Length: 322
Ligand code: UDP
Ligand code: MG
Image (spheres, rainbow, N blue to C red):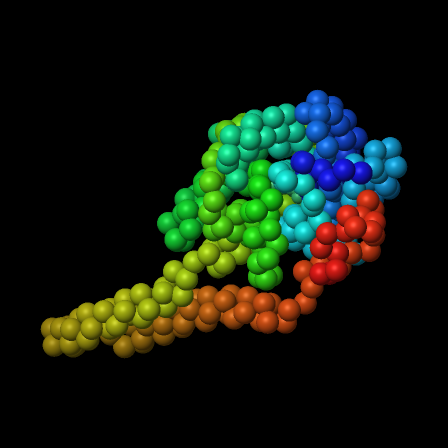
């Protein structure tokens, strides 16, 4: 098979209800584009019929390949694995639940042909997502922007097109904490956006639980900002300032209201709790960074693969690295 021009990477975790529709739509669109392509499904340790569907698609059309993880490693790792395996010159990452409309491929490819190396899809609206998700996402992207030096675009997830050159840089990055949308912004190159409105999930339930989303958000901040570390310094300065004010306050009270119950136990209790809280928060923040250092130095493989298809002989790209 000739080397593909386009590669589509799709992380999939228990998406049996969405795969038939996705397969249909992707086939129609990619056949319409009319160049050599490959679709790489990364099965992130699904426990439903996902893997057998992927096998079926590969048998029907060898351009549909898959990598199957030995367990669930998470969305960002699944995308990373997909990028490790792609052969194409232009690589598109999209979700399996059809929230990222495959039809946008035409626009993404057009921008790439116009010379952009990263074309990320930016959502202008999110239909039918809960107000809570919309609000937290809105606030998060703006906080992240303020905290980091890298201009991580707001309201854009992992749905994007990347040129081979960008993917090579991403694949060469040794870090284990893969906050893809951040790394993608970090690499630079010519970037542009394409606006789209995010449709609701075609079927099935959300695989990103609130906990997973929160952990992704913390990963984003911790991997791209040292500002939280500075928080300890600021809080220390604040406490020092408050201590100074307190000295005068207590002296004043002692002199003018010697019998006031405010001095003594109350004020001491407040001070102990306040300082205790400040210290624990700061230790927690330090812990976040130390935990990440630990993850990095252990140097374990990012994922374990139990099955791949469509990668025989010379076309096996980065398999040796696993
Ligand atoms: N996904 C995955 N591993 C996970 C969770 C999700 O590969 O542990 C995939 C999922 O199958 C989907 C994409 O990541 O293709 C986005 O997940 P979801 O739609 O649940 O999250 P959203 O971003 O829409 O909130
Ligand atoms: Mg989704």
